[in-house]
Length: 616
Figure 1: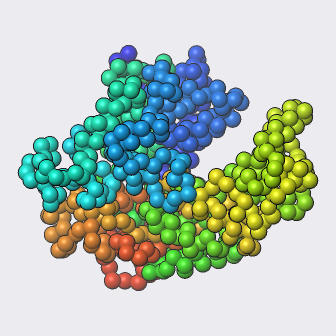
Figure 2: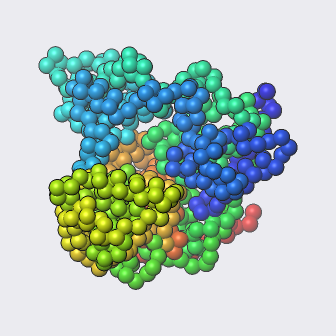
Figure 3: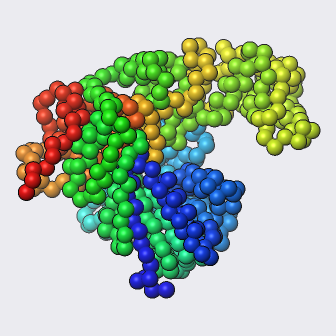
């Protein structure tokens, strides 16, 4: 089939516009055609979580088991894994990364060993080398471009590009030379060594899978291709899309160029904006944003010149946007607590960087309010919640269900079992499940007396944090604060804390968003702004240390747009919250320039609908 035979539809969906619902409607329309079954359609989403959500929702519409759709609703990497006929042993795992780093002499932190630490895995040099190698593949760049990756590098630990490294002797980024006694890590050399290690051991990473699919021209055996969150695909994924597209009868690409949050991974909104297509559809309504919030986020995003205008209609009139200037983390924690006590709505607290999030958690933990995190840092997970509910039930002399009993068997310290073996409790749960023929373990019940037969020293609430294992230090502190506080039974998902990136696809009634940046982000922005633009704006100097930050790039503007557009009722924008962080003024966010005006007055004015364009 020639490319001219392909019908490509591009679907734009702004925040809360029901894009996923519209996408599923399109899939059902395809299925209504003669001789078309679900096996003729491939739906691709950017993340596993997003793919799982689409799979569940589509299975519910078709009244089938979600598992039966696994081959037809997946990530692009999962489909590549299938096309390449790989097995788990072929794919790079944590042990492989650990082994390479040990051989090469790099520090490495695997996914689980640092569970009690508050530092992100990406701060470890071995993790950064491996992540940088993948980033270069995703963005189709040379190894010599490694310093473009959005990481911070320590000049005492690694050799920086010769044009900025004080120890470099001569050469450029392709042929640098160094003193003979310079034993710092050479990042390009380490990246090449990692890639050689994979080749020698027959291992493939996620980016390797996509490269092989493109190189071998492997195409899914379907007639219709649907790709969601197209604005976040990387350059490498776009190349695979271009490889697949000519073999299709119909293609649907859906996304929102305003909501690109993975630019640092190679996502480029122009891939969506400039995509060849036959039809365009723009969803007209936001089922999330009230008018005042919508007006503010529109004012923020419309400073980007090249974008698709959505012209969304609000969910309702009203809503509110507030500005808070120079609050402390303690004041923010108190404000969130006050909101919990005064309103039944959901709450989201968002930051530009994880270290900022942890500063807030330090202040918020003592409140005893259970909360969940949106990032991969584990806090009030379902697993921890089940443990806490089991302890509460035992203390109230009420039965626990089978899942809660299993959590006790798994998470209690050995001392809780005395001379007994914890495996005996596991066996008892399995035996009861078999006896009762229960399909769902939560259908089982165990009395506190039965649990005590296996774990005679099972704790009450006051000792729950001391007697738990397999948790992070933050989780332990959270459990301690919870049982010491006044929020028993509160759902941890009601308050969610995370980075702006992690909030994509989610919403809350009340959204607190800090505008503070990081020096690395400001450094990247400063490097991308021309001297001519700085001169035109009257900005004398723009470096990583510049604060307040006088402008933001389009990519950063899109990130903050995502954060602001999570709010269903109330948006609170926090300026100059994090001590020592570069401050992004609210005036730059809303008006693209520093203004010496009251921040609350700025957001109140921004809530007004824009003036109509003058007639020609």
